[in-house]
Image 1: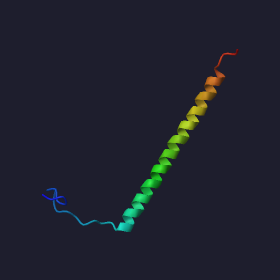
Image 2: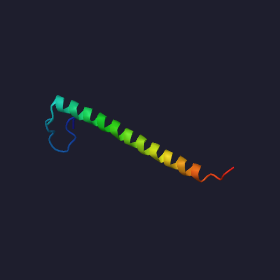
Image 3: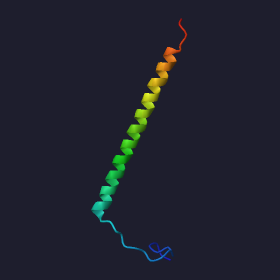
Image 4: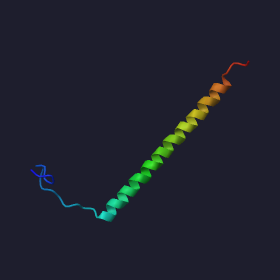
Amino acid sequence: MTETNHGHGNPAANPFSEQEWANFHKDDVTAGKVIVLLMATIFSVGLVLYTSIAYICLPPS
């Protein structure tokens, strides 16, 4: 067995060009940034809501 053939059948040719791989990588990076932005937004909204409720429920001094 070699690096290209791991005993699971014949190795297939790469069906994607280098340009397509570059586009896939670019799309993956963009998707990762969007996911992080969404997570940060959800966290921020939760933090604001939690802080608002905590302030409202504070006993008067």
